[in-house]
Image (spheres, rainbow, N blue to C red):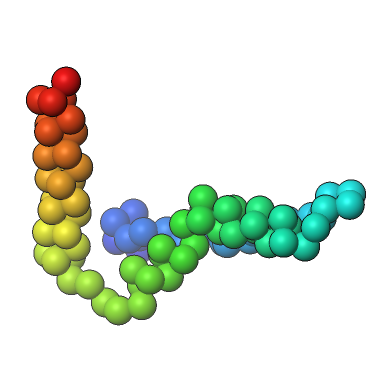
Length: 79
């Protein structure tokens, strides 16, 4: 029971879009898609598709962080 804090907690994913008055179906789908992206549902599903070792996950996150920092450093240097 003590390990529960270390694991990521699963949250319920409910995205609901109610149609507005005289709203086109395409617009409704676009709003739904935006909400799904904002909640990170698809990203979470892709990440959980295959098991990733914790060490590999740390390496991936560190690599992403370094990439962002390098990009910010380049932008700062050009100004």
